[in-house]
Amino acid sequence: MNNLRELSWSLVALWAALILVGLVAIYSATQGPVAEFLPTYIQINFYKQLISFGIAIFILVGLQFVNPRSFQEGSYIFYGLGILLMVVTLFFGKEVNGAKSWLPIGPFNLQVSELMKIATILAVANYLTSRRNISAENIKSALTTVMIILVPTVLILLQNDTGTAIIFIAMIPVVLFWSGLPYGISLFIISPAIIGYLSIIGWYWGLIAAVVLTLIIFMLQHRTWLTFTSFVTGIMIVIGVQVALFQVLQPHQRDRIQAFTNPSFDPQGAGWNVIQAKTAIGSGGLYGKGFMEGTQTQLRFLPEQWTDFIFCVIGEEFGFLGAGFVVLLLLGLTLRLLNAASTHKHPFAQLVFIGVTTIFFTHFFINVGSATGLLPVIGVPLPFLSYGGSALITNTIMLGICLNLDFYKRQFSIYR
Image (cartoon, rainbow, N blue to C red; front, side, top):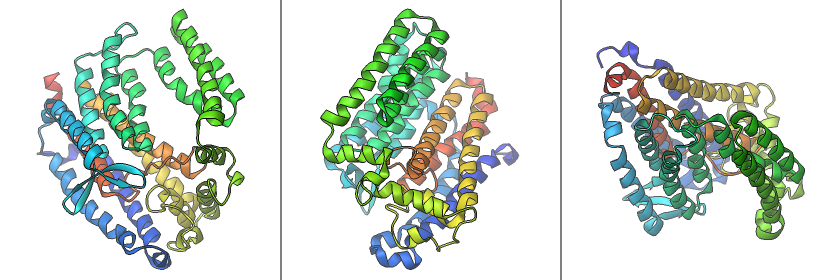
């Protein structure tokens, strides 16, 4: 690293700013008046996160001295080891909040699914690099890519961690589209999620979405079989969601869905999280109530306020300006990574950037959507801000790899 000026200092600054804001919010959510409502093992979360930050600094710096070719050459090995650890976790893992996704290693607990994100991104990028263009006819390459992502996804679902599984699934249409999959087929892949979401709000919205998306897909692709399949799939999803809501789901699961569309339906039960989260953000106003002065935070009305609802802590204590600042930081990180992907000449590096960007943005979208009531409460942390050593270190490793590939892009592009 002879010329540090070529390092993407903007990415480093965004990374540091997000972590520092997160540390401030975690401190407020676990210290001061709120501490009397919390057990000791939670009160020390701030200090554990501070230690993780120190470790993350060394990792970020150390990754810049790794040969960028190593990430591609070792991708399948990393992926295989990750799958092995996922299987081991299924049998010997520790259950936390209903998800058996933690592997005890001495005094530490490792969330293997976090590390699997890195391994999956590298494996997918390596595989697709040898297949520069995925067309509508090249179904084999597309299916292989989907399988590489679905294997860890299924293992994560078996661990009962739906939120993390959604993050993996989100990578499928993005990496395929970046690799050359036509617009129409890419939209067809993501249309079930759109139709399903709107069908929860109302069956008629789902039906409208199915018709509109089918028309758009036809205009983009002009393939009869794809248009017909799209429409039939959309109708089946609308019907399936309604059947699931009224016939398949358990009462408590239906309550959660109904609480998403109408939190006041069960304000003391299923709707509690959404109501308290929206109350916290709304009560912050423009400037916020002040550091460690948030009523919802300090009186412990917010659930999991140091992890899943950290955004609400920021919104309540630092107001719209503080929450807006966090959103700008996360959007800035997303745009900077997308810019790096579009300017890098090597396809492997491009796909790594895209995979990392997808994971960061999906976390951001779901977390903020859940906190503001725009999405059901799924339980996904906010990148670099929420408490969690495994998540912080994993996200830092992903960003460190991107920094490395961006820094060595001239040398790395030679090996195309």
